[in-house]
Length: 61
Image (cartoon, rainbow, N blue to C red; front, side):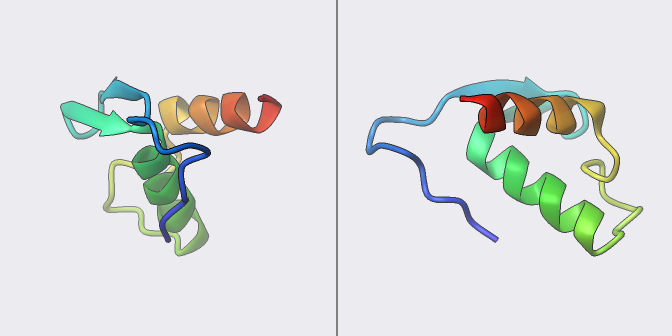
């Protein structure tokens, strides 16, 4: 699942603790939702507190 950015500017990035590299917020949210919806427990995104926080923050904006 890919989320379209709200604008054509470069999306905000952050350092992902699970993958140990930089991701866009949109990539993180897509991975987080997919891993939890499909219950992919072997992925670092499953039940990730960092991803859950980003998703909540994005929903508030």
